[in-house]
Image 1 (cartoon, rainbow, N blue to C red):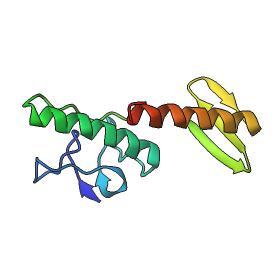
Image 2: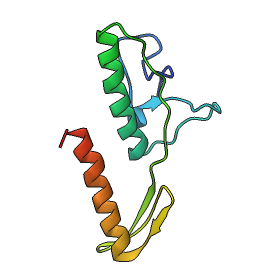
Image 3: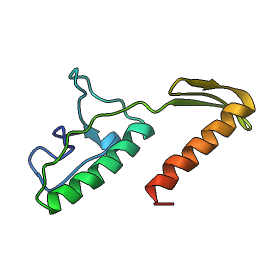
Image 4: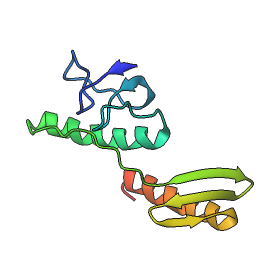
Length: 111
């Protein structure tokens, strides 16, 4: 893992960033973030904002992970889902997961 600053910049190369399972960054309690897709996705969106800020000589912001929800695939169109204060399982959980990811990835590509 590559150690990074709170802004996800490489320690010795301030013009480079590392996200996902290749970086080593810590939360506010000085514990390393786990290596999972939800964190990597948030880091990717965060780094894109910080690159924009870097190019425009603005202050870079530190990364702060926010838990959006947890989904557990249970087989064919069945999922246990917990997001925010909502909990679903079975087909309804799968449908909620599907809509959630379409919303999240739709935001990423500007749809």
